[in-house]
Amino acid sequence: MSEARGFTLIEVLVAMTVVAVALAATVRISGNSSSNAARLEGKTFSHWVAVNRLEEIRLEASWPPADNRSGTEEMGGRVWRWTQKTEQTADPNVRRLQITVAPDQDHEDVQATLTGFVGRPSEDTSGRP
Image (cartoon, rainbow, N blue to C red; front, side):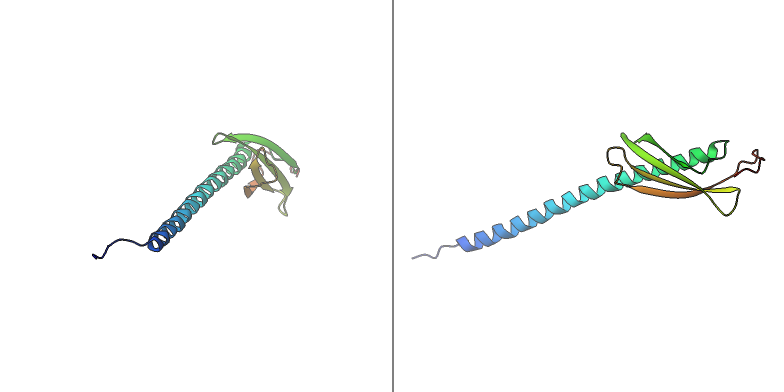
């Protein structure tokens, strides 16, 4: 009787189990990577919206009042809702601005918060805060 060579059924099952576990891990890693990339993209766009809003305020010739404002802006094919809180500081010639940005469809999911300071425009000499 000649000796047959080949894999036993148990060896084949073990090999298939190892391959299945490796493929499952690969799929999971790919899914996590895609999810992280989408989240990072959202945070980047929302930060850009906040920076743009702060620069718009700095470029305006008027002194921003100490109040709260909100609006929307489109960036990256999505609509973002920004909220601006302007406060007085210890220096009467400086205002503190806090801008938060969230996707327009989910206002609770704040993805960026930016704090900046704006000086009184030089042509405004009224001395009013």
